[in-house]
Image 1: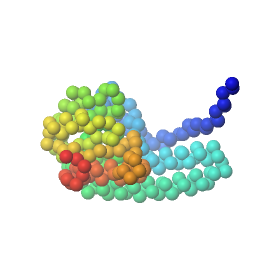
Image 2: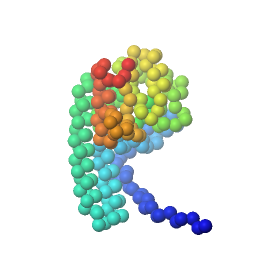
Image 3: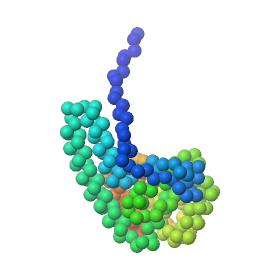
Image 4: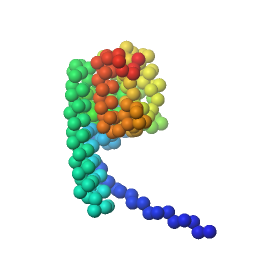
Length: 217
């Protein structure tokens, strides 16, 4: 019996990074990833605007009859991204300058930190098997103590167990869960990309300002 032929699917190779200057992973926490590009550029609303252009143009090339619709939708989404960029910057700007130190599990916030004036530190550069080592934990503990970091954070896609060790060894508290590589369920704190950016900015600011209304402890 002849197997049914599967329908052909178009696979778009998007020039998504076109026009986006990638930051490099640096510092002792980068380890073997030292000097490699940080892949988390979408955490910058400005970079996301460029991604939107690339996606719209790729779709327009694939189905030219809908090109103007794709471009108009892209323009509207870019306006929303611009608004979120302003919101996120203003939220973080409420923090005192000496509290703008962000310590997370993964080094996923370099672009957001650059855009908002935060200084980023992390346990490991990218999620991998080599994470949560004794050296990484000791380095994070030293950072908290030396910089007086009031709160630390972890991402939704990894266990916060390692960061909780940093909390137990210092006076920092756990500031909450951040979203980077995934969204929450509908009705959760980050069901869309725009909600993700807002949630992360608010969670970071609440934690670093000592707002006990957050999820941390």
